[in-house]
Length: 212
Ligand SMILES: [Cu+2]
Image (cartoon, rainbow, N blue to C red; front, side):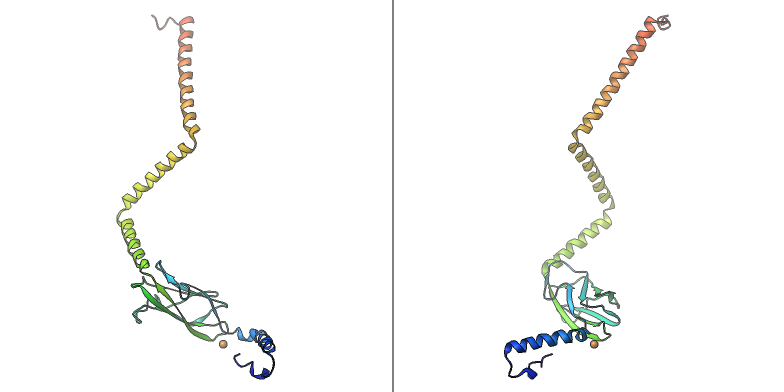
């Protein structure tokens, strides 16, 4: 690929470029053999301010089983934060869980994955962990501890939330409360009327039973 200019020595630059483009086009199907990284999380060169829990590599072609490995080495140049022996494969994606990263700085992801043509490739990307990510982890751990030890608190909070929801519903639908009040008043009025009518009937009808 780097030598296509030689046969074209003496031709114009434009012709050389056209020839290179043509060669690249013709060569493309055969050269698609080895997977090319097209995306990753974290991205190559990125500065990350939230703690990642995995590293995922996405390639242009499927990653095959067999001999895949990903390491995530920290700023000390030694500690590998990748967890587990197995790289998770999902089509064109290869991922590995990572332990909570312990220090800010540069992390190197070295990967050896099996290309779609069966040949392994070995490459690396890197990202930088910002100090804020470590703060996030402390906060997350505290929140988790509270959740673990404060079950009752959590429940109380939920009940409060439900109460709040109820109030909110009433607030947003003021007619609902008035309707109930109106219905209660109507029932009360009907009750009073019924009682009055019954008494009147008893008094005017055969109703000496109460008086005697
Ligand atoms: Cu190959």
